[in-house]
Each structure stands twice: as C-alpha cells, then as structure tokens.
Amino acid sequence: MGLIMNLEWKVHVRSFPTAPRGGDTGLVIPLETGAVAALVDATGHGLAAYSVAQKARKTLLQSSLREPDIILYELHEALTGTIGAAISVARIREGSLEFSGVGNVNASVNLHPMLVRTGIVGQRMRTPEVVTVPFPENTWLVMYTDGISTPRSIPPGSAETAARKMVEAQGSDHDDAGVLLARWSKISP
Image 1: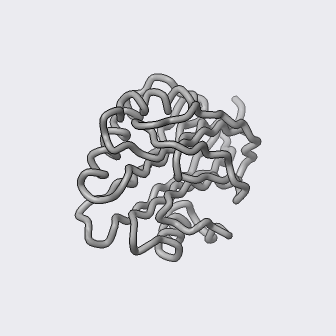
Image 2: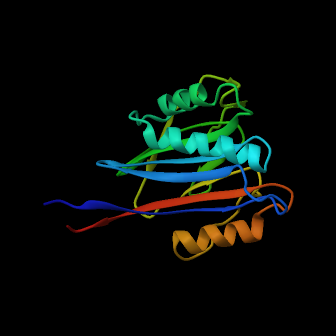
C-alpha cells in the first residue's frame, strides 16, 4: 500500500467580548481524497450573526458538492434573505489546494495571500474564482476573519496551539475573531 494523508487542523474562534455568541465559525470536512475547509464570518456579531453562521455550517455539512465555487453557490442560496456572510472555502488534496473566497475572510498558503472576491454570500455575491496552488507537505493553510490582524508569522507548535496563539495575539477586541489552520503530512498505513 502507498502513503496516506494525515491532516492536522484546528479552528479557534473568540466571540465579540460582550456577545453571548458570535458569527465566526469554521470546519474541516474529511473526504476520501483530502478534505474541505471553510471559515465563515457572518455580518456583524452577536446572536443574529451566530444564527447565520450556524445556517452556513449546516449547509456545509449537508453539501454533496466539494468544489469551492459550487459550495459557495450552495451557501449563497442557503443564506439568501439573511444578513449574509464572508466565506472562504478550500478543497485540500495531497499536494494541491483549490481555493475560493467571497468577502473579508482572508486566506494564505504559507503566508502567501490567496485571491478573495468582494461581496457578501447570501446578498451580493460576485462570481467566485477558484485558484489552484501547490500545497506541499507541512505547508500551512491559514484562513482568518477580519477580526484578526494579517498574520506575519505562524506560531510554532501544533495547529491547536498556533490557532489559539494567533487569536490571542492578533484578535480584535471589537469584533469576533476566527482562525482556521490546516497542514498535511504523509503517514505509512
């Protein structure tokens, strides 16, 4: 048998300081050949944003399509009539990554920024553009909401440790703050 992919990932979110819940959420959905990663920042914060973020999360979990632009179209349809959200989606495969984002959820591969289109999913979404880039072993995918300052470095350690440190050090006290980190490595079966 050949080698298989081990994906290490973590989503760390801190809600707006006075809100009981926030509008940032993220998840990684394992697939037979890789994974789909998504980070959502619903417009605003508090319970209204939380409701939209949870609707987006449910849509992602029920999605049968795995290409980033198709997933964004599904999310746009599901969120129509809501306050909307900024969303970035990545399809991770061994050695490559397909990415598409709408709004101010930014992403980078080893701190090299990815193209994100302006707009709001569920309200006025421009045509998503999918970018495919190399994603070698032990390379970081970083997604972060507008409540996080643009990362200049990735803290050492596991995805869990690095994501928590990024939110603590770079998270805004005036907005929800969310980070998704993912990297893969080969393991023998």
